Amino acid sequence: MIADRPFGFVAVVYLVAVAVLLSWRYGCFNSPPAPDYVSARELASNHRIVAADLQRPSSFAGSLGFYLAPKASIVGKYISVKSSIGPHKPIAVSALADKPDMQLPDKMQAIAFPLPAGSFPLSMLDVGTTVLLLGKDADTKVSIPVMATVHAILCEVKKADTENCYPVLRIPADKSDSVTKNQLSFHIALPSQVHP
Image (tube, rainbow, N blue to C red; front, side, top):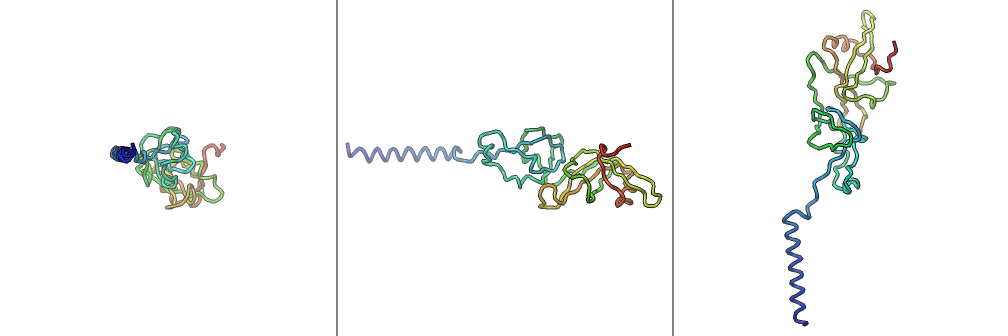
């Protein structure tokens, strides 16, 4: 009886070792694929990700933050897929880019437009937001209202959320000379802020 014990012990150790090797071989001990964050709201193509856009997935491990990439590695990237990402949908790494898409429709031109001091918060602007540029011609003093669309939000590298960021506006090409020539006289307004 006593002589059988070493054999039984060795057999148990052998079986455990085989189980561990098989588990290792077939990936049982590998970390599961990193889950994606999900969107807190609808995110349009070319939208710049901020921390408030990201929610943990509903899976048990995801809800605890296990295997999730650090938010800082995603904040500041742009939605690169052509269609928007709906609310509570996964934000795959493959759907992100380091830079916005700056291709413009025909007869449109992009202009960087840093918000002057005292403007409304940049967080009120997003890709596709319609804005109104209000200014005057430096020579004739005639008012020049120009409708524009936010094409992208650009920020200094490694800045958090909206710090040191500004909108890039899409304006009709035939208005670009007037805007660039008189840009210092222009201010930006949302259509809801303009009263007839």
